[in-house]
Length: 239
Image 1 (spheres, helix red, strand yellow):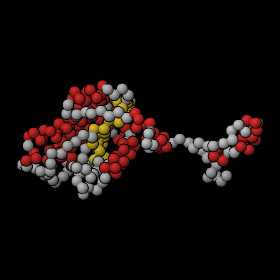
Image 2 (tube, helix red, strand yellow; image 1 turned 180 degrees about the vertical axis):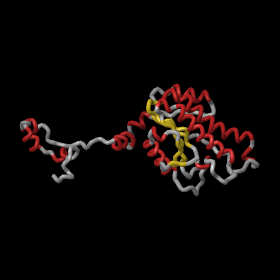
Image 3 (cartoon, helix red, strand yellow; image 1 turned 90 degrees about the vertical axis):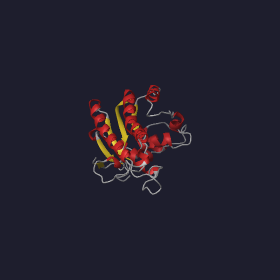
């Protein structure tokens, strides 16, 4: 074997029956095992693929979905009480936009603005509040925000939506401080401009592209980065 091939992980793939005989096993025993095979080391990525990719994957058989209304505190409590295993990732993703008008347009009535604040802001607070009791010891709390919530902007459209996402980033800071002593990581993310009902058909990212990048960066998130706002690609954003 060359130096590149000769390592602990690959050398067993070259073992055959004659090697086993030379090692000391008697031919009569070796003959009972006519097929000799080698198992590749099981990596994290391979294990995830095994558990999730097949049509009847184990994970798919054990997924349980709960219906929860983030503006109904009783609904949040009921779901949190029915989850009996610690949560590794708590992702507050619920969000609505009442429209892209200014404060003088019909999409910014008192009722519609309150609805946005209830879902985008209070919903995140209540979810974290009640699910914090079932977080794992090294869990991560992710709040989905938006670049439209940054303070340095020159737009007058979607006024209350912008305000709600600015509030989400501010809440993220408060929650990160609350959980620092428990070493729980808290961050907010901008999902990118995504082709959804809200983002529209001209957006630059598909839902799969955005979600894949977000998941990768959720996994790479460390406690040293708690209290920060990130783009979907993992770069830090000022807010």
